[in-house]
Amino acid sequence: MRHPARRPTPLIGLAIDGKALRGSRTADGTMIHLLAAVRHDTHTVLAQRQIAVKSNEIGAFTPLLSGLELSHAVITADALHTQIEHARQIIAAGGHYIFLVKGNQPTLHRRRLKALPWRAAFLNHRTDERGHSRREIRRMKICTARPGLPFPHAAHTIQVKCRRTNRRTGTTTIATVYAITSLPPGRIPHARLAALIRGHWSIQALTTSAMSPTAKTPPVSGPAPHPGS
Image 1 (tube, rainbow, N blue to C red):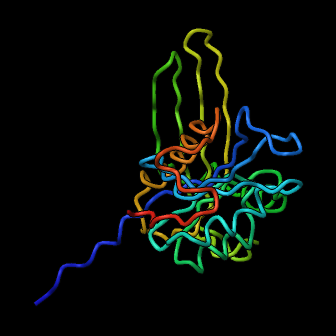
Image 2: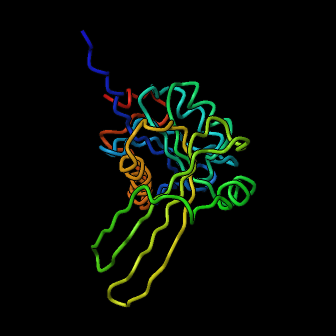
């Protein structure tokens, strides 16, 4: 008797984002800066750490994730955290990553991602959204990571081109963003991959004003629950 194939466990998007707390001050008068892990779907802060004085978010990344169960999580992060050791930590914990790539990784950004034949690549996903007097069209293309890509466990490279038109002024701006992911072919649909990238940007917008503790937020250095709980 043939048993039906088991479906892969759904993956939870978990955004890593840092912000300074408005109106806060440390003993030396500097603003308090936190790095947090936030679920895409519920906006729940699962863990957060205060950035040490004279340090930055990169050093807080490893301890932030060390207490989380990542086996069913996709970690999304901006270009600052597109670091080799961060990728290795996530994969070793059983998770996946989607990292944005910008000029802080010049070899990866310009020579390996931007130089790919994107014009000839298939369009994998497209969204067309209207609201707040503007129209946004996003086009996502995916290329298999080529041998020699200087980043561990990268399975795909991604290009997202966003065309935003202000319907009041008629002004149009176009922005192109590149990313890499460890997600293997067929692990999730293209629409879900695009939604994870948009979900990260939504978390960034949500925490722009402030990242202050709430009833959902564990203590700054305390343990955090499983992403699926």
